[in-house]
Length: 148
Ligand code: DAT
Ligand code: MG
Image (cartoon, rainbow, N blue to C red; front, side, top):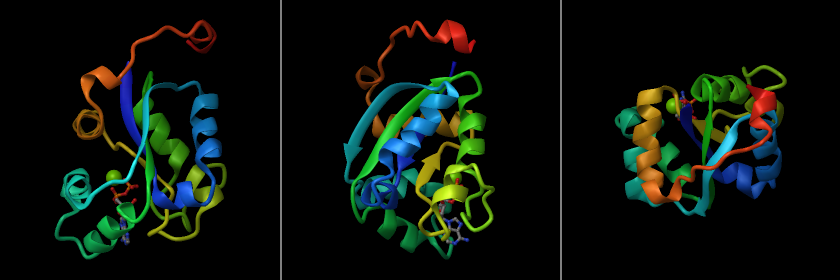
């Protein structure tokens, strides 16, 4: 089963949207296998967003993601990476379709509420930045027989 790192960014936590964002992904059928709240420091932000270093928005992005606590979650499921990207919507909430998290809750690209890994390769790199192997739990859900 695929895994994806999801972050509920500082705006999602500050606006009280944590439960609603998690609910959407849970209702889709994805399984939570790790979760924590943390305040990302500059070092972790730089490593998580290393691919964007040098871009014009990089400094603002790091300032934003380190401005207030986030929720970090590992979701697991068949095609979890792609399903989460679809559920999040376009990077720019102004362009994201209705029915997506960004489309329904945001208006500004600098405040787009959630992060989701964009590939399986990046998901394992990102998960390793936020979670130790012991923090990722293995358990059965009875309802999975009704999802798959
Ligand atoms: P995504 O978060 O959809 O994977 P990304 O990886 O291209 O998007 O960019 C990471 C974050 O950087 C994104 O969530 C918001 C910010 N960002 C991206 N492009 C931007 C831009 N043109 N102006 C301002 N912020 C931007
Ligand atoms: Mg990205």
